[in-house]
Length: 266
Ligand SMILES: [Fe+2]
Ligand SMILES: [Fe+2]
Figure 1: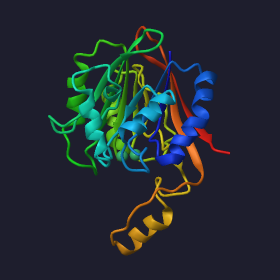
Figure 2: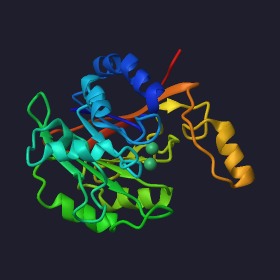
Figure 3: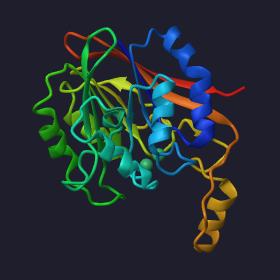
């Protein structure tokens, strides 16, 4: 079984490159399940219900997020819509599961692929150089307990390479993949850990690389130079699609291989 995980989709340029290339990637690599981080899909900041459904229409089955989840308040209404209905599309938009208890949204989705294979997607956020949420290590243990699917993919949305690598090792053999997001910079360290968990510190951004992590570079340079408030705007040049392709055994959930994918817009 093959899973394609697309890194942080940033604004319209990110959505467009997914629209232009996803079908071909899925066909070329015989992908059975497509997941993406969508926390930046609304002009770089947050996601709304209509944007989530636009991504679902492109063939993405589950959307993970991170610290930008609340940037567009409309997402609260979208989560509200899901209510107790586990089949609502809104239920397939995740936010980190280690946010304070009783916040809207969910950090875990359990579904079945078109071929009938059960799978689970988890979303957690790091705590180093980020807001102090619950411990993602113990939360991962807790979230994994009721999961019966063998295929389990975790998007670990975190800042530091060390926290991400540590969680990868901590979960080795218990999940199919631990994939990092949030830094918007793909790392060249993809590998399958000894007990069968595919790992990559950061999958990288799907969006404009003529930028500083998606934002117009002049604005970010100005912010660093003057330390005054600057209104960030999404950039639009040099767009790449960054993803990880995982091949795994659907009966054991163990990964066989992980491959870095980068598609550049012509
Ligand atoms: Fe992001
Ligand atoms: Fe983030």
